Length: 198
Image (cartoon, rainbow, N blue to C red; front, side):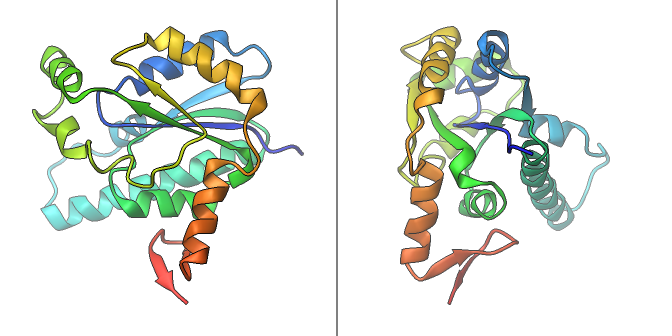
């Protein structure tokens, strides 16, 4: 059974990932794609208040489960569009440990800080300053197959760019290059997504 393609959108909150994902599902016509969003997994969790330590542990398990659900969907041949915020290094290393790097198109979703702030204020459903707190973290790994700037292009235009690029994704992919960099640094992603020195 062929492994499904994974279009992995990474950017801050309010950068436009979900809007681009919806456009991709509308225009991609060479397969059946599913939109898997980390926010959707967070919404499935119980809403009762938890102590901070318990909440942190639950959030980590939620994200680890999200990463493995991506792998499971793609592993049985489904094409998926992933909507994620890699604002902690372990999230990327965990994804590297469970996703087939050759099947991932890694897309950086960028947006100016001024525009992110404006969108946050307009939405009213995000803590003020959330995007700003993630701004310098989500792209720290510094490598993508393709990038989009949603402060300069519409979600539809970004989706069209990604669609055009998808059949020409490079070999090795950005995921494969990043994984190799970690290995060359004498570290490896573990099943728990932490970096472990050999």
